[in-house]
Image (cartoon, rainbow, N blue to C red):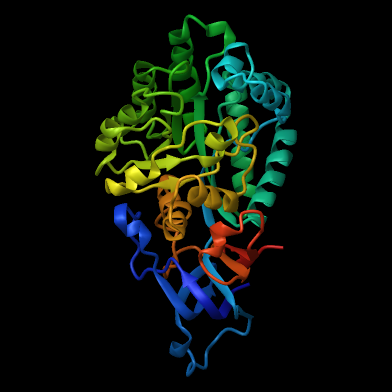
Amino acid sequence: MKELLIKNIKKLLQTEKESKPYVAGSEMAQLPVIDNAFLWIKEGKIHDFGSMLEIESRTNLPENQIDATGRMVLPAWCDSHTHLVYPHSREIEYVDKIKGLSYEEIAKRGGGILNTAQKMQEASEDSLFEAALKRLEEMTTWGTGAVEIKSGYGLTTESELKMLRVIRRLKEHSPLTIKSTFLGAHSIPMEYRGQQEKYVDLIINEMIPQLAADNLADYVDVFCDVGFFTVEDTDRILEAAAKYGLQPKIHANELDYSGGIQVGVKHNALSVDHLEFTGEEEIKALKDSGTMPTILPGAAFFLNMVYAPARQMMDAGLPVALASDCNPGSSPSGNMQLIISMGSVLYRMLPEEVIHAVTKNTAYAMGVDKELGSICVGKKANILITKEIPSLEYLPYAYGENKIDTVILNGEIQD
């Protein structure tokens, strides 16, 4: 479809004349809106938008038109933290959690990430690709138009490269905008327990050079937390990755005050993610850093953890992003509408703040803010048309309902 006009839009949300990278602090409570609006898509990009009064006299309008009376239009969600490539679910461990075992206890006995890693080594690339593609298709029905996908369930050189090859295939076959992140430092394999510096050596001397040679990753990640990788490990890995131009995105402070936020900022990480344990020192480090604080409500909810201090972050002038952390162990859902509701219900974020957190700020957190995340001329036409809903506030309020009627990616309506 070369041109499309969406007309009579009840509210066109997240508009801007000039693109800026993200929204922070008190500005997150202000969401740009045009009432009774139009949106013109041409050659897969946003061509024009504004009030319906502005186009009443035009004669060159596209033949293909959608009447959005009673409905809202906004950018598709950007999900900046997922683990979508995995071989099987882990519902048995969920029962262990119900019985009282902690995330750390399950990991220590070889469960969790190591459980999936064992199955990953046995899985074929075709099976992994087909399963992940189905997950992407389901996420699209809930409004997601861009995802970052991590490796990290391989934990051997070949399995990590296999995961990254699958992500590359997804980029080639899916209409979603996809970024790839190398997360070889997701957990410490059992054979390296007690000598994890040798596994870090493997990541630095073998994994990173090979994935860089094949251009398989956009970013590098490390699970810098208690019981996983230390600040010193993280320093070494990020210094090695920087030689190949890989910018960091860090798992940080999910389990304790680990120093992960500070080491992420030190290495100019695009984002630091999880952040359940974030205090004054961490907020100070993030201030004016260019590193996006990214909260993963699904994981904290599923694991019954403390919630990251979103309100304190915004009150301190920080931006906040929200992502799904879709994975088989700690957040088995890629439904970003549920994340939107969690942002309001669990983290006391206003609807306007949440919309910024899942569009503009998450676009920044996955490095696509120049092409996605807002309604701006020249940006990629990844657009959502809601069902007839009464208000913006209805988006987080109706947490069990799919409020999306139509998803448009790259200017094309998705079936």
